[in-house]
Image 1: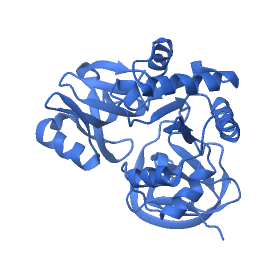
Image 2: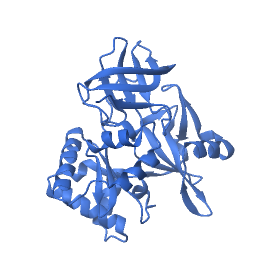
Image 3: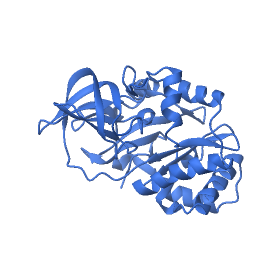
Image 4: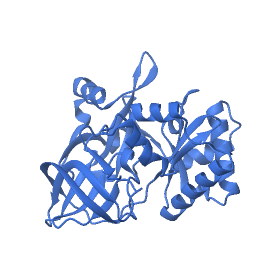
Length: 308
């Protein structure tokens, strides 16, 4: 089974990040993240990825009827390799580290085990999943069980308190902010992020934790109704760190905010008033939601707490 945070490689040597579990019209829903230039892998952003496929491999440009959105899709028959975060993490933990990134990963996971974390519920994604890490690479971990993820957040907070891990410094926050390129001020971005405890430093290397729980929801199709801005109170945050993240709100017509970009995962908690900008959608049953992150950079879209 293909899940978000997995990667797939095609017969043409393209590396796509899977963005949704399962298949639609026999295609894995994904997004191009790496291409080969002069026999070297190069990471690409949304604009470059779309243009590259339009020019070279238009068969991978895909319109999702379920999401009413343009995305990338790869026929299963075109996949030559499936990168599974859980399997690759277990392999990396058994290796003699051949670079500092893997050594830091092993040290971090050792600290987690000492705190009682079950690493069978954790995987590695990003460049380390693909073996494309370099000296400056971050460590991107994904957890597949909600309660274990909350324990991980508590462990990170504890490791920071004991100085086994460290908070991000100002330069680290600025780099993360610039990479995200989001529609928040730097101060707003840092204020929201510092209370999540899903990222920190080990040996001056940043690591991130994300949550991915297999969805049990009804298969729904959505129709876009246009851009919207709204203020509302969060009334249920239990899925706030999921992929996609969901926040139930107290609006009379719109039941939830759904976020497909990690920037706004865990962005608010129960009782907080939030400002939202995104795309209004309605499913076939008439239920409305606001989607934040209709593209990876989520330009013009945000979730932010209204605070003093």
